[in-house]
Image 1 (cartoon, chains in turn blue, orange):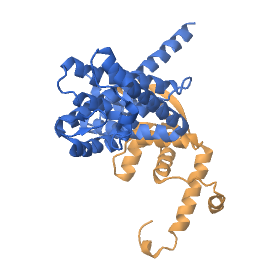
Image 2 (spheres, chains in turn blue, brown):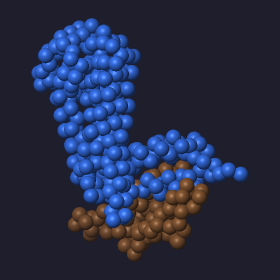
Image 3 (cartoon, one colour):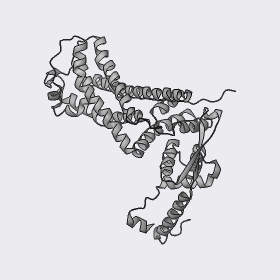
Image 4 (tube, helix red, strand yellow):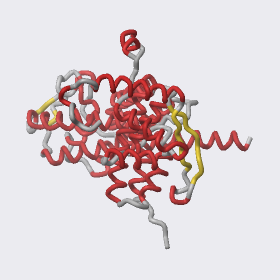
Length: 245
Length: 117
């Protein structure tokens, strides 16, 4: 008789999003209890357990958590500052001259630098799919991966502190609390009208904009976790080398 | 305890923290995630999130109220080791203090008279 195995996706989620030194022990306990429980119970435990572990880790190590979040945000804003150059420079595209700081001076946009990639992609609807994927997925994914990697370097030399999931959780929360509601309001005010120093026109409908935002959020979370996993692999390699030595 | 509160050194125990410590005392040597969560569910009749139990235990361990050690790994745990927890002397004192203060707060309340204690 084969053993009852817990849902692998839920296990993967907890392993990669869960924070703190007890992740393996919790997963072991869940696997053991799962023999008497069902899939719904397992999923409930994982979906409630992830935010609990992130908040516990953040509150337990406030200074490190704050440093990680600040480092990640600085890395992201550096990317936002050089992003237009990447977009127009690497594609040899004759884009409008772009002054980020006057752009950010707009009161409605200043807080929303997180979704500048979305604005870029929607303000040029005639572009090819490859170009859209480049500016909307590939560049932000690479930037978020670097952010995830930088965030985990904040705590270099310490074990059991998975800061990438913490930063990913912070970005997710920020998006849910501010960006999605903000986008809806922004759309209502500016659809069909020029905005910003470039006079871009927002031509996309609400559903499309929300879909792009959700895609951006997914890219940000995935990128940060990817960057964090690079750091973990790096540490594991060094530990293995040290053991061999 | 009230003196400690006046001095500002009293940190106290939250309700869930107290429940976890009491579960540890009931379970003795066999206290690890599964058994602690099971004990809490049995006593409270509510589903317990295993990660919350660990979060609480980590907090209590930071305060020196519990200690932990790694145990054996079994196939049904996917090869992952158990983590056993024990209440420390300081934890026991904290539970006694909590009991004393709760009992004194409970005493003489007309709303609770005639109810089973």
